[in-house]
Length: 259
Length: 268
Image (cartoon, rainbow over all chains, first blue to last red):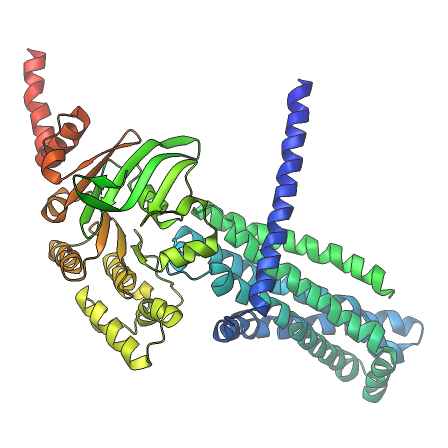
């Protein structure tokens, strides 16, 4: 009984190493096709549209809602200490450091990451990627790379938009409904948010999350089984793995950035 | 194996072994496809007809043996080098394999845009000609989802031949087509072969059209090939070939009738 267990452990380990190696090669290929011609700007623009523009509504709506909730919660807590004036700081800091990039990344994973994985996986199933190979077109460069790059480019922009909408949502609730002074709200926000610590850190997070989601979604789609079960496994796997990766890397970046 | 009765083979599979998903598809499969002829690959479902085409296209690498195109073994070259080899090969996939995010025109023109310096007008002219040849004029602005399965397959054929490749691989070009379009595609293949000397390798269930156009038949049985000129293969005494041909000729209805006719005798 002992030998098979050890064998299984060995198989699992080599399988894992092979998987990681596969991802490393995959990332290398994406990077290569980003820096060497032919550059596929039209494909990139259309992917930016699919990933970014089509996510605008959900990002704005979620941002405003999260901001409104923060305004409400923050106000209730702060007013116990008579510190309603710091509402802007509380809303701004919690958003820019954590909630903005993390929630944006989770939302984009659900909306665009899953779509990317499903699209590539169904292209595998219907032999569209093989069709490209037969035309001597590398699917990595034609399909995968523009999608992954679009994700990296779009994530910080969406994250910034989420922040703006959330600050607005907090303003509406805190200032319009609960009576905090508008000038105080904005001044406390402006004074508490630092560029290097907060804004740059937030951008680093957003770019990292974008890269993670872009790679995970395209890799899961590209390596899926050519069946309908393969498509669904790629989609589910993307959402689960991306979400965990986002939360784990959020902790690591927060710790390293010294916030 | 590169000569056969004075014929020169463009594509040669030599001792190919292949196991897919735990199932042994080929064991020492050897066969050749002559230059400038139409070769038809026949066999029951699961015999590996599509896999033969995927091996020739370099989309599937064998476990052993070699696949040579114009003398070059493509089983041991890099993906980059394969792209060069594939520039002379067009392939029609069973499902058409058109990119569904692009219009029919963009799909068919894609190989020209990628690999030629033709002007926009020249590309439009060539794509228009090919779409007309497969019986799909005026469909350029439509998306694949707006066409039927048979139409998508014909558009896939237009894409496969748009660059005038030397070798065209067709996976089941006739399945799902109405009789008029079977004739049309068959005539187109014969014309491509006669006029441009294109080497065609076609897999098919459609025995009638296969026999009409084939210069060579390759029969896949038990992971091996029985190949030769149609007359020779049809006259083969191999029981498995005979069985396949008999079943095709009689059709399922006739076979059923023969069985029910035999039943009373068995009862008596």
